[in-house]
Image (cartoon, rainbow, N blue to C red; front, side, top):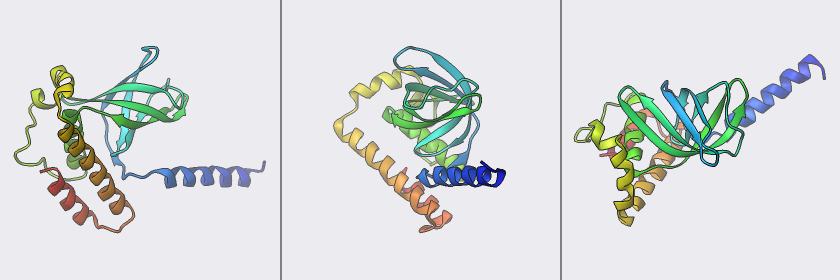
Length: 186
């Protein structure tokens, strides 16, 4: 293959990859620990970006595509935990993770992080104490969550995903989208 063809092939692959992304990504650096669900194998790394759908983790030993894992993202004194699936993997580089599920308190923490890194201030009246969003008891409390709360959390995630997609496609301006996200998370 000629050098020009290799460049063209690489550019086409990058374009295809970019087109598959449904969510607006924000630069985001935090420590990550991922534990493979089946074997308990642990890898560590750092995030380089974050979106509603997932994150990219810089790590020398990424899991293979399709691996399911539990992830902990630590930012300052807060920890977000979620079940993820590896959707992209490059040995020596890193892996793309898609968020599969998280407890409602974890989702609220994640939503707050997204608002902050997208340039929005934390929402007033939202409890941001570590006990409210990051402790292990909060994860266990998920079993006490009502079906109505789970449905509402899911609806909020879907709506925020839709808003972010509309912003990415420039149907909504950044100001309009951020205003809608702020209203959604009140």
